[in-house]
Structures are given as structure tokens and as C-alpha cells.
Length: 221
Image 1 (tube, rainbow, N blue to C red):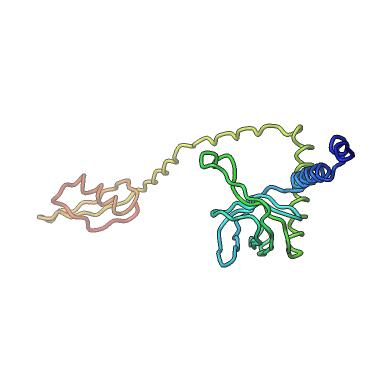
Image 2 (cartoon, one colour; image 1 turned 180 degrees about the vertical axis):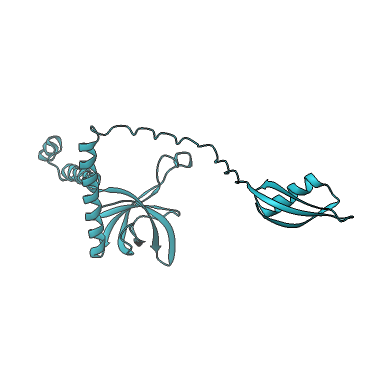
């Protein structure tokens, strides 16, 4: 009789253990939600003698979630090697695989398959990295909240006016006295022409004299 009353009142051992187990799972899930910091960092998964590429998708002092290119079964211990950005130092942690998340192929673009890990052993640099992430996220959130209201949309920059190409300066002409002699005779002539150079003066003089003359001298007038 007492055993029936115990079962109806919830005092039985099996019922109490079941409630405690569910509460523990809920508390564990709450802790994961509170402390995980989302990132996407390339990593290597050391599973026995296998080295598999993957990505660290979130981290916390006690665990992380890793997206692996190959399936990893829960229950074993693996190593995770990664180099946090801006730290420049490679970190290796040892962790137990506590859960495995598989995603159907048609949902691969909206969800990430991978494994949830519990940290077993990690160097001090890992916890320094977690602390730096928390500090940067808090600082960014504070700065974003205080400046978002005062920020104004960026005004478009005025277009630069395209200037027309510069015209070359005209060359200055100078008077030259040109001495010429007839090719097939004994006649000679002296004439003054305006030109930009001695060569130009010779050309100008020959245009006036004709092809049966040759230039024998050019000098400034």
C-alpha cells in the first residue's frame, strides 16, 4: 500500500531521479547558451591518427562547437588545433565529444553539422583568448549603443570635375636672315623670314625661292 502511495505522490526513487536528470540537462543547456561566443576559425581535428579540417564555430571556457568535414562519433577524446586571429599563436586543446549534430543535405546552407565538445585540457593561452573575445564583444556593444543614434548617413562625395586637356603653348617666331644661292647659276639672294628655328627658316626661304636654290647661311636678323 505504501509503495502505491509513494508512486502517486511522486516520492518513488525512479520518479525523483528522472526529474533531477531533466533539470540537469536544462541547466547544462542554459550554461552553454550563456557562455558560448560565436566565431568562425579554421582548425584541425586530431582524431587518433587522422587529421581532419574543420571550423571552430563557438567557444567557451568549458567547451566549443566544431564543424568537421568528416563525421566524428561521440564518446571519444579528440584534439583541436587552431590559431586565433590577431593572436598569432597556435593553441591545442583536448576535449571529449559529448554530442554530434548531423544536418540533412537540403538544410546544409542554413545549419551547421558538427560536434559539441567538453574541454578536458587547455593551455592558459586558450582562456586568455576567451577573455579577449568577451572584452572585445562587450566594448563593441557599448560603443555601438552609444553612437548608433548620433550617427548620420555618410554624404556622397562630390564628383571631381574633369578639366579639358591643356593646349600646348605656341612656339615664338623669330626673324632670321637667310642667304641663298642659285643652284644652276651665279645669282645669290638674302631675305628675312619669321620662323621658330633655323631649320624652319630654311624651309620657309626655300618655299619662297623655289627648288633651284640652296641655302648657304642662316643667322638672326
